[in-house]
Image (cartoon, rainbow, N blue to C red; front, side):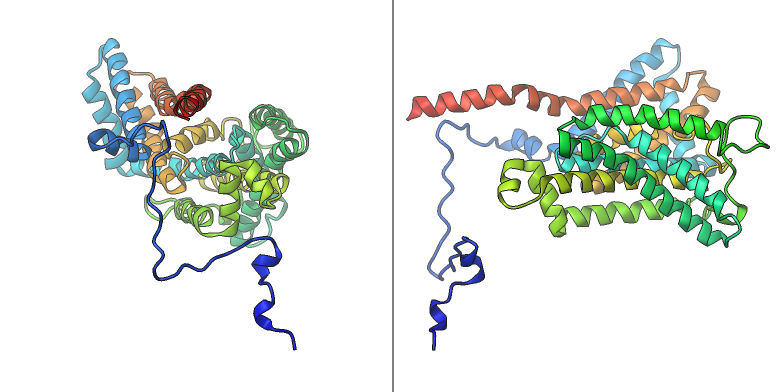
Length: 396
């Protein structure tokens, strides 16, 4: 009879050697790398450790200050302007409902950018993916309009998810198979989606009773009726943000995404199929953006696809993701802020005479400032690597 103690374990069969720690074993002391600067302490250390929270806050405050200067240049008191904007967005029923309605697609589009970022990809195509989801929802809702309202709504959302996933998968497949940079492909796909959908709403999907290019409206029974000031889509978006955070932190798929994002070579060496994971990450992201489009179709009056339904929601998703520092849960407060700015922009114009484009400017400044640490890291990565190599060579 063979001695079972000599039988190699499953890990040893695959070339992985594991050791069991003993009671006397203690972890070795952490020795700082030769030539590396000591970790910062005090206030500077706190800023470095909590930069994921501090950087977005500083960016928002700085953007509001710069915006205040420009508002003052227009002859309006900045304090009064901001008070008018946020009072309407948070302290009135119509404004609060508008803020929550904006939050839904902003959270979903933010997640559509966050997931690829965790894999090392930059999805600029949430705008086109949202539009694809919205037109797919409009087409399927009209096709099954005789079904019960709940069934129509579910089918429309599923169609939106599939359409967005398919549209994003094109960029993922190009990246995985031909190495086409996802920024270029997703930007081009945005333009292709806009042109294709413009043809559809002026041709096969145009509602003959509409005076302007638009799809058939969603059946009355399938439309999302808000619960007071809370739209139906908001709980869906919040649950998905939590699920995405759980997936990235607690599942094998999330671990694979994180591994690829941190080091593709190590991920490939570990047996992770990079091409499949890239396509899957883009498909999940596109599905979330497509869901945002289908929810907009079912939730926002006039309940039909028409020019401008997407607005800048897909592009705002980039701001949301960067403000959230690629944290799925961080998309919620980021979407709340951006949603309040978007919802209150019209009221700001009516009460102060300031053009609503001031909100676009605030978001652009915020995006620029919150991106500075990332840009600096990319710009100085090579310089830092050279400095570390020089220090090691002199110290050896």
